[in-house]
Length: 87
Image (tube, rainbow, N blue to C red):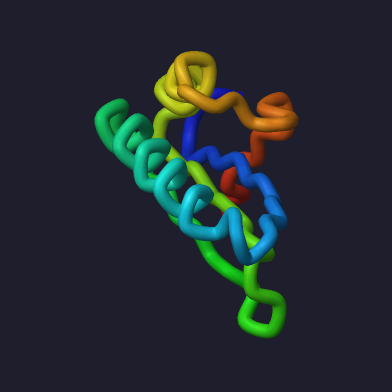
């Protein structure tokens, strides 16, 4: 299936001393993905500072797959690609 919206996600936990470095790298990842027509979000768990989840999404699975392949920091498991389900 190649139509519809697709996304990947990754959970990362960093120590307080690594938080700023993580956020700087996340800004770089956002630049990479947005330049390739994808959207990128980072959320931090409200009750656990340093626990992040990153989402990368595109309306074009091929564009997302290509952006992931060329990413400056590869995901732990890029094969876990989710597709939007029509309801």
